[in-house]
Image (cartoon, rainbow over all chains, first blue to last red; front, top):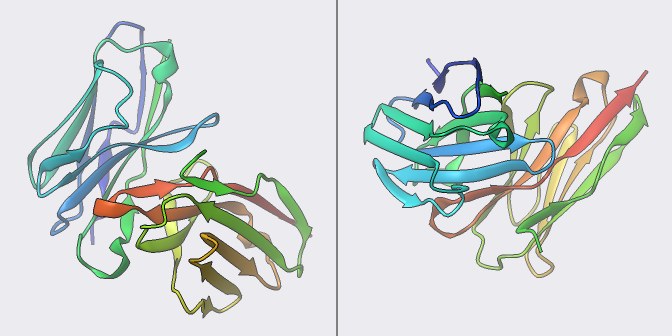
Length: 115
Length: 109
């Protein structure tokens, strides 16, 4: 079975450029999460969706970050304009809310470097 | 105070050792609890859920103390392949999963 699919896997971009990260959750899952991981702060929840609706975006660092989920099989995380401090691994994860324990499954991550 | 706090690492242990990781959480309304494992440069993966009565999966034992808001993971007879970062995860209200900073384990021959 296909897991969570993220693209791009790696991106290097210049400060000020727009970055768009993409995610396809596991088919049938109705919750989707965007996390950011850095050495300093560990794994931080940025935003999560239930049934394509954003439920909690309190982790989004600032207005430069935005996320959308236009349908059940696709989500984007956009950074505009990007800054060097945005360099991190961005993970998308999905789960079937309501199953026992809400286990979430992660994609392989998008490794972003802003220079 | 962080919502989920873990033992700082790294833990360096010899093969065959028993090692324990601890985790505390701040939200008393938290509903479910997990341990995830993350290998270097990989995504986190579920190791095991943590149940109120405690649970065991082979060499791994997880315990939950709701009164103290404390979770633990015990690894017995550690293997080289157990080397990884172990993440404590708490499901806060509304399905929001909060991860601890992680504890790095290095098992040496």
